[in-house]
Length: 578
Image 1 (cartoon, helix red, strand yellow):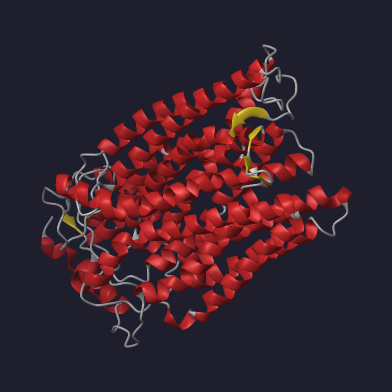
Image 2 (cartoon, rainbow, N blue to C red; image 1 turned 180 degrees about the vertical axis):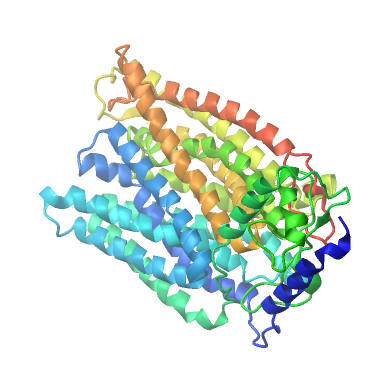
């Protein structure tokens, strides 16, 4: 093929580029932490409300709505799962049509509506309708979270301009401190709100949650003029589908990029120093070797060369192709982290029921609410985040030479290992609790307090906090950093959907264990925990998590980090994980 034959398509390419680029905006935004702090408040309030509700939800379902422990656990897992799936829809709306700011505003208003309805449900709704209205309110909250979760963190991270060295440096610590703020709010909720729910009333407890979100909404609006807002660019998924179709159409093309075939140049290269109004400065992705079949989507064949206009369903840019590769690389990581959530959700369900059977006295007159034990996770993280950021990272940096001490995938892998250890320790502690109940003749008295201190549960809660610090923060950073820039809300939704699908996996595991063990006359997860075999269930989760970790390591070994032309390739961008 002669290069002269492609002049029509190259000329049209130049016109496309000129049409999409305009002068840089003259308005200056403060950005960085000055803007991000207003956004953090709305996230802190939402997490405060979520943990104030989910942390003690099993108590309300079993004590007030009279559900069995297993059914309550499955209902909670389903609600958490749905709440984590809806963000996929919210991310699509934000990236394609509404933009992140409007999506956050709308979803926070829906979330506040759900909390108000929840408060009314436990106070004025008659008992014969209370259960149905209560679950309606829960799923209104799930809809609100659908727009809130994928956008808030991404919108806050967008306030840091990666083209400014000082803001890029601040952004490197942003995810740690963002997570720390969330942990503070979650810990406050499980200590304060759950105490109010158990000792004052559910109306007052849920009313506090609604008030917190209302105040945060006002604060969020107060910072409206300080935000960097990115305009939605239409559906970014169309460009991804175009690559797949173009590559399929040219699957029999023999030319390769290393041969004499001509590739359609990415238009961002010609204007990397210009900005598009409402969007961050374009960055050109470097070509990678994985998924090379997709490279055919940017080969100019005879049909493309003879056309005066580019058909985007036959011919795509380098950036389009590489963005599809970014998404495809994250799918195996997504799949291999699902088991982590199946472990995490135990803290909302069975861990709380364990604690309710143990001695929780602090002093002569104070009983520690069992659901407030989840504050131990937050306290662990509160201590661990500064140590991680100020001690572990500098030490690891000296050994590895990596700016963050360890790579994102290594961080996730450490958390997955800790989750296995968490389940093993939980099984051993539960076996000890049952043994103590047996020694004191309490096997058939499930409401009796087993003479064993609740602080035996401390190690499993601490391990849960450490696992979160490594895996959750690592996933947040990975799915923000490695997704195409126009799809970062979807990246947040993808990370959150791990939590949702993992909850469904846990629900399926509970159902399977109940069905299998009931056939042999010894149900592992019956309401009487002294006769149940919760420790066996924990061992099952530990073994499944160990097998999952092996899969994760194999996947991570072949992962290739995003590469941007003109930027130095860091050590973490090599496929030597974990």
